[in-house]
Image (tube, rainbow, N blue to C red; front, side, top):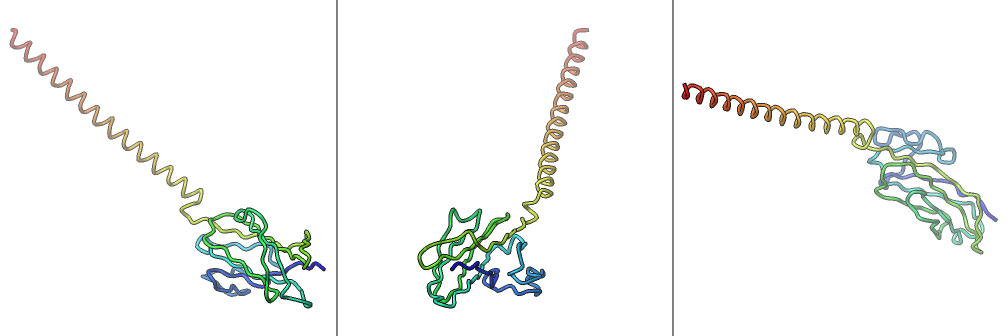
Length: 178
């Protein structure tokens, strides 16, 4: 018989995140994982782990799961459990939105479409935000404008100096011809 797995633990950098507790100055879990559909993390909180279980009182050692983190895993991965509980971890995830799904597989290898799922959002650092890209573009445009202005000013000085030199030479040749 198939049961939908339930999430029993969420970890950041190997430390379990508890409901309502501050974790690195933020409350990550405001309610139980069973009722949590989405977890939002900062860019440096990208080493995560999920623990899940399904109800298998008959033979927990036969518990098998299929799981997938969309955007990271190419397909479903299988996990066999000795104690009925499963744990997966992902390290160094880039910023983005991920969708984690896990389902149970019975002893015959049959699977179902009943799965537990959760969205995990890792926010970008300030250096990767739209505002930062705007600032980078503004600085690049300002630098290019300054370079063009400096070049034009230097060219103008050279042209004026050359014209002044030609004018002096013309004056000298005019006075020497008189």
